[in-house]
Image 1 (cartoon, rainbow, N blue to C red):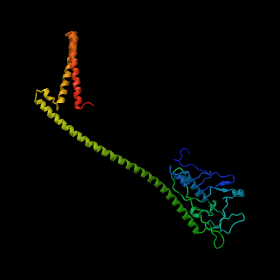
Image 2 (cartoon, rainbow, N blue to C red; image 1 turned 90 degrees about the vertical axis):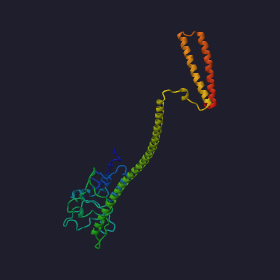
Image 3 (tube, one colour; image 1 turned 120 degrees about the vertical axis):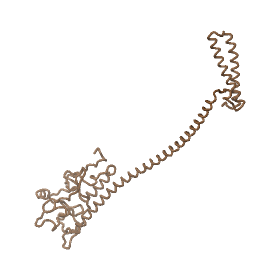
Image 4 (cartoon, rainbow, N blue to C red; image 1 turned 30 degrees about the vertical axis):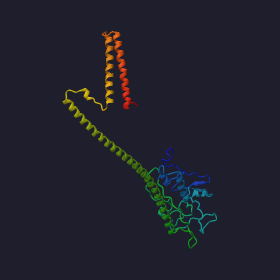
Length: 340
């Protein structure tokens, strides 16, 4: 189907022209196959290869088809059609046609020559006795099973029935030991298959839990790294906060000193640590004053206070002084090592 492999496939038996579909617990009259593997289909765990292997085992024990016989017309007139049996190794009662007759058994209804309508298994065994239903002229009913899902209930895949051995009288019969061994084999196979399916399911769940554990371990390591990083950042922030608090206290102390002294000597407020720096500071201050003087001379010329000749003469002198001051500052910077 389009939803494969999320849903189990639909399987059918297609017989040839000389074969009939054998209606059983695993195949209906339309040829549709019902198996436990299909009913308990697990997405992304069940596959077609395992399904084919299950079909090989199941249909090796109970073939889904049987060959048409020459006496098919005669069989259709009887209430219960008799199908051919595979030869039983070691059996003494084999007819001329090569197939053994139904064995006489006291477990079937007395006084009636009616046999169960189901053929034997592929290995030569016979259907289960009255524990699976009454054979006294009625179709045997299989034991009820619990069912949930989209497939109808189905019985377990059974192992081949034990080979019928001739008794002391030379006629092949089914004994209580054969029935007990066959039932034990069926129960063991069902338990083995159920345990295998449960083991596969638990193994898949365990693998999922292992992946989840790996993801959680990786996430835990990542969270631990984040916590360590945040802890270091917190310590650094606390250190910076302490430094800022100290600087703030120092500024408040200086502000308090300034508020106490009303008069501030500008020349004493700015001090240098070397004569070279003092010379450079004085040159910078004089150069700034010269630039201001040139600006105000230009304002006087624009206002008409000064004539052009006086303006040019004064500006020429101030510009020469400004050039010398800038050259002095450049030389001082070189001596102090402030030029890159």
